Image (cartoon, rainbow, N blue to C red):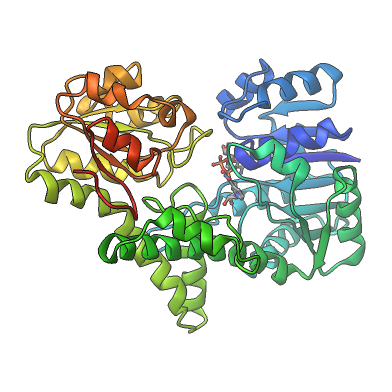
Length: 434
Ligand SMILES: NC(=O)c1ccc[n+]([C@@H]2O[C@H](COP(=O)([O-])OP(=O)(O)OC[C@H]3O[C@@H](n4cnc5c(N)ncnc54)[C@H](O)[C@@H]3O)[C@@H](O)[C@H]2O)c1
């Protein structure tokens, strides 16, 4: 069985590498020649712990091939997994142009019947649309079967998640095609949920929307704790021990970002609108998250008055630790707001700086370490809870900053420690230390 993976981003690359690691013959195809060259040299274009080693191992065994040649990718494939991006359009809907262009290529270059599997997150009905595009352009003697197989991996632990996922969702209106894909995944020994096409598409959106809702809910409780008293961490512990609720996604913070939650809940809301359904909870989640991302900035302005001309340090740029992904990260909104205030912005992140530098160039400064970034700073914001940042000694803030005023969007430090070190410390859902 020859398997081609289309798109070597976070999902396609990790899926391809893990499938080859369990013994499949995998060709990973991408239109980005630079990425393919890097991958052929054994290096991952994305930061994902453990990925380089698995790439090198499976290239060496001969089970993993990378190509930017569309003919080589598709002509011999028995199944093709599409894992291209579905970024948001300006109106919040999912941009399906990459998917559509992959479908057109598949129709053009396959030479035998094959199963086309969509791993990308796509609105309900898209798999049928993909099937139509391919079938319309396909020579009459060829047939494709369509399977929806949404992906649930998390950046930063993507390899672990692929081997240890909670479930594999396989949606198809063709039982045999679904069974073939189930067999491909059999070595992972994970629970499989078989559904029809549309239900599989909906499972992905419903899952991400529910997790986003949980985050926004605890953030609102945190905001209320700040007003009425109470400590969000104690509250979340007490709430999370209820097994019906669970303790995951109950960490209050500056809101969610990344390449999935914001775009997926907007796309689901857009889909609901298209079908004339007013999805009230989802609209609130979107609103709450937007406001949450601005909270620390407003808190800093309330506390300090103007930030104009002040040296401000941001620690943590990626949307979460252990990834280099900055898509929809809280840092981007913060940098933008601070620049509008004429603050002098210095940033530090263990891996996220090159991507931010591409966006902001010399409009901001880049510290070679957290300490360097904090030097002579008047205010610091923590936006990503990298271990390196969480493990900073509070002495560091005292020693390097002009005045140690810290706005911690990830509750990295204990209130007592901040108090003992004489820091002015503002966090989320906990009393301020002033
Ligand atoms: N990143 C995640 O954590 C995650 C998790 C679950 C689901 N998803 C979903 O998976 C999909 C992919 O996400 P990602 O983060 O891996 O995307 P990405 O942007 O990191 O990668 C997409 C890749 O596809 C390539 N590509 C675009 N058009 C192509 C074409 N026609 N043929 C071949 N390659 C093409 C691009 O060059 C790029 O390398 C999205 O729908 C996303 O919502 C992402």
